[in-house]
Image (cartoon, rainbow, N blue to C red; front, side, top):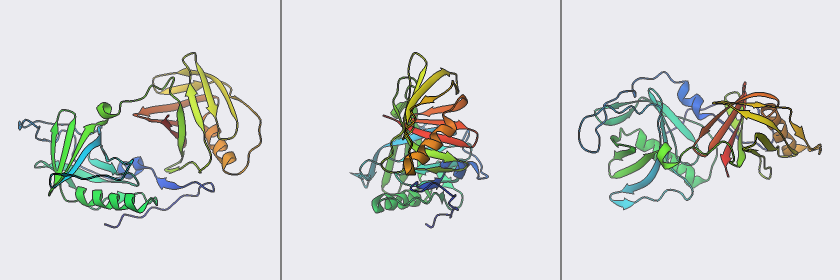
Length: 278
């Protein structure tokens, strides 16, 4: 399989950029995962709405024997109204899809980001893309999803059960991506930026260069941030670039946020930041 190419946007030095997964799937014109009939584990016909759900792998077997994924990696499948996106530890792939006669049918070639990774992870990407393109059988039993293709069986669990959302308040968040328009850049090696919201309404931030904080009010899906006071150390290079990206988002005013399992995303207009818990 040859992934569709994407033009890499301009990015700060030392940052690795890929097209956002959301853009891959959201840009496709697609048909039919909402309300698709998927057979349950008990054998009774049922209407299972896969749209809006994300599943994480809990096990893979080939011909009944364990199939070990690359250490530290996990398969993620996310379904929208009429598409599927997948991740196996390196790139994110996605395409138009529907469930037909108990099979996941991908319409046309999968599109993919083009981030360079360890060869073993890139080979795992190809393996998963080939499996998804082979119309695997789909069964759903409660929160468990099973894909079967030939002798390979992938068992997955709904992300809300397998990896629940972390608490926004009190969790230490570490920056792992910088969003600019439709692209996300990785944080340069050697630069660490963190964020934490305390129970008494303080936002504590380490920008990758300076540190400080602000008063913050947490809403349902937005933060209202007061004036941000920081130390005044001068930084250049990657640390300075990361600080500029952080302060473009974490500044006085309203910032949208979303928590998805161990991930936190902050957005202000076309700029954004992605964090991981811990």
